[in-house]
Picture 1 (spheres, rainbow, N blue to C red):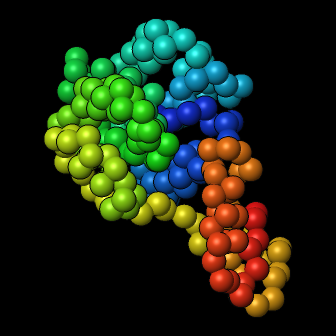
Picture 2 (picture 1 turned 120 degrees about the horizontal axis):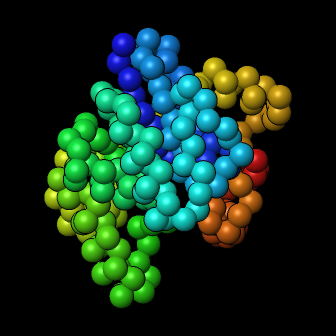
Length: 212
């Protein structure tokens, strides 16, 4: 049986990254592939047959614990899903040949409002991703990452996966008549709903703006 490993944030944390990981994990499981998770960071999730938490926020300890747990497996594919796990997987792959894949989810890691921060990011990204296989979700991510930081890597643009039937089921719980504009996400600064509201106010829209 083929085995796939997902590296990402703690499974009990909020955010779209975990939703994507779980959806893809379910998809691969339904294809008869054995899926393992390596959530990295402080968590309440316990060790199980298919979940192997790296339960610490110490970067030094994360590397050590991951190396100790991961060496017992020989996965057909290992997928890193955030910057921290990408760094850890890239370090591991320097010592052990593996089939590794890196997914860029977070647009905020591509920001460079301060010039010195741009050069710091470029150095970090090139160290991690040069020569790797990278998944991006759209052309904008390519422009803001591969092209901008001049990273020499193989890249593929694949839109986010989602469960359409589950979305329809949840949407039916909130019936709204007519056309409307919908913004979905956590009400936190990083989601920048303030920008959406200002853009809506500056436009000439007949539809109402709904925030979920």
